[in-house]
Structures are given as structure tokens and as C-alpha cells.
Image (cartoon, rainbow, N blue to C red; front, side):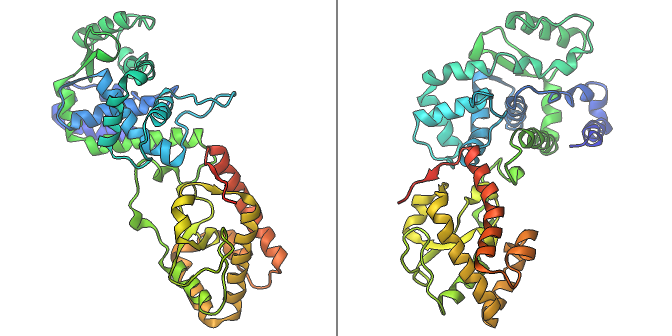
Length: 392
């Protein structure tokens, strides 16, 4: 969200007269400024979601559980690194480390529901305690730092106890804060939401969550520069968004006139008994481009799942099928019409239309164009943590 958009949040809320004299919207807009780690975004998002559900108070423990649930799918399904990686290859972000530890402790799939994730957290709470406590060290306090500028009293960042007392004083004497904290320690510390802020957040939940989402996406894209389509990788997507019907019709047309051999089994693909799948996983590329799709044995699709095939020998076999398709597109008018039907949903990459599928490519030239464009994407997925499928 651009600076003007951030101002618009404050402007919109200030226009609602009942908030103008009581809430410091400008300081609220600073709650995500200058984060050191991504879990600052997830902290505020969890707070807003809990308030929208009608909570007047909660605990650090409950907020951390909400954060783990909200980040679970992005980390597990798409291998998103919430705050990048350290020079030694270790994960930087404490929230991501908590999710990976829960992965080790449980058998939860990447698409587990929120209820399933929360139940798993409770079952393994003892083992997760240290990871969760680390997430409460500074973010609950630093999230309020934009409000502290209203006071001339210096902030004592070194002590949770003194910070709790400081927050209480600021709230009582200087400016009404979104929340104050109880005197309990660590995960048991209570968060008390202020009534006026509850009302404002409940009235503007959708807009505030949209703002948080935008800032979060900017942060994540900066820390995952090789990941395409990141904005679509924060929540589970509707499978109906997949656009494979026309590609399947294209391969059906090819199978009616030519044998196609399965990339992985080297056996003939049987018409109407195969799946159309992605060579580089859809969860990484987030598109259904023709150049990444292949017919494959249905029984192997679940085994391959969200993994990368070994580059050799499978890329060469994949390229052979692509070249077979390419040749028939330019030789058979009926196949050309089926190919044209793929334009809208499956042919958006300029290099594919202008280089790969243009008429006149020799076999090795076609292979070179395909490899030149696919190998960097494949390597990016591998660096991001996608597992290689070692089928023989």
C-alpha cells in the first residue's frame, strides 16, 4: 500500500466523527512500520481477527496460536520464508521456526484446517513452548511504538515488566492505546483490548486486514524475490481457479492421432485415463501455462504431489512430448484449433508464443528454448525448498 493509501486509512476513519477525538489513527497506521521480522504483521493480523470475533481480552498464548494458524499454509504449501534466510542457511523468522517444529511433531498436511492446526498445537504445546515464548519477546510491545512518540518519557525496552507498566501509564495519561497488558509473565500475559478501538476495528475489519495483507505481501516478496505469484500464496486457493480443460482437450486430440509416452513410466499414455499435471509444481509457478503441462499416469500424480521431478532424465522426456505437440500444432489444422483455444488461460508467457511455439524451430532449438526458460524457474523452486522426487 502506497503512502497515500496508508493515509487514506486514517482519513477514512477520521471522517467517521465518533472516532475523531478519541483515537490516534495516525499512530495506529505506524504499527507495522520498520519491522525486523514478518511475525509483526501476523501479530497485528491475529489481534484484528480476534477482535472481529468479539473478544475483549486474550493472552499472548492465544495470539501466537492464531499466528501459527494464519502462516501455516504459506510456509508448508509454498515454502515461503517469512523473513528470508540467514547466511548459514537457517530460517530467520521465529514464527516460521515454530511452524517447522510443529511439522516435525505432527502429521498435519499443508492444507490442514485451522481447527486441525490448533488441535495439533495443543497436543504439542510443551515442545512448542520455547518457540512460542520467543515470539512474545518484543513484538507485542514494539507494535505500539508509534504511540510512544506522544510521550516525552523514555521507553525502557530492556524489561517486559517495566514496559508493561510504561504502556499502562501512556494509556492512562497520554494516548488511548489499542491494548494494554496484564502483569502475568510470558505466554500467560493477558492482552486487554480498549473498547473504543474494539468498536473501530470491528467497523473497519475488512479494510484493516486488506492494509495488513498489502504490507505483508511487500515484505514477503522482498524476502522471497524468486517466488512468483506470492500474493496468491497466503491463503488456500479454490481449485476451481485451475484452467486445464482446454489443455486436456489439446492432448486428447494429439492422443487420437499419435502415441504419447508418459514422462515417468515411459509407457504409452492411455486416452481419457491420465491427468494433466505440471512439471514444475503449480504451487510454485501459480499458473497453468502450456509449456509446463504434460499428460501423466494418474496413479503417479499423487506420488509426485508437490515435488520437483529430477531434471535428468525427466526434462528430456518432457521436452520430447512438448516437441511432439509443437509439431502437430503446425501440421494438423484440428490440433491448431485446439491450441488456439488455450490462448486465454494457458498461453500468457511472451517467450512461449514468440519463441517456443513459433513455426520453424528445429528439435534441438526447441529443446534449448524450453530449457533456457524452464531451468531457472526449476532451480528457484529447488532453492526455495521444494523436494526433488527421486522416481527411478
